[in-house]
Length: 111
Length: 114
Image 1 (cartoon, rainbow over the protein chains, first blue to last red):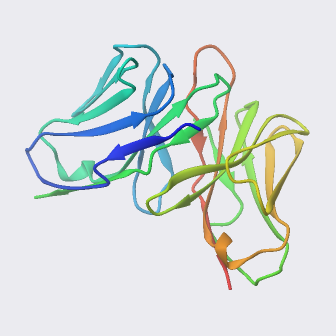
Image 2 (cartoon, rainbow over the protein chains, first blue to last red; image 1 turned 180 degrees about the horizontal axis):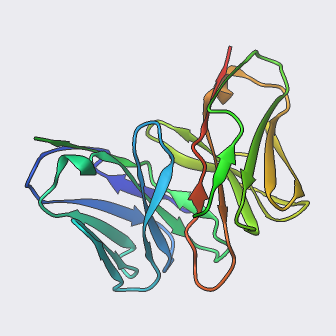
């Protein structure tokens, strides 16, 4: 059974600081997705990582995938309040687009 | 833009009722999914469908059934609602086209079973 674990589950940080969210998974896969969810809103796709060593960047967020370590990271650079949200990683292991989600990381960025 | 529309944002039902949650997508996607979201547990897959009238169980199908009579519509049915089915329910769709496309989510239905 595939397990996807994110840590931390909750992160409070100051504006301007850097931090990394980790996503570990238990079964070999080279397809990993990152989503963002604002309170009361739906999930928005951020990144699709499809191979070992894949790195994607959008603004202050950068995601990477190490399939050998079964680890993805979401790095936040110089955080701003607008990045406050819950971030989910999700792993696809059977190419059928069935995703197993991590528990989510709730990020709060304080002024 | 892909639009996934769930019929209700909030729903309150009673124990034992049969409950229908409806989802419609407008992008001709082959795949459709139903998840429930609970704090600390992330999203858990209930059922998915890869074609009309086709369905596959996800991780937590017990107490639920689904129906997909048309490509754009995927319904989740709680046969006899129980209080432990109080949750946020999210519908999603995706294409099987070139590459691995992300799933697109609806706004969710917050269901309370009293």
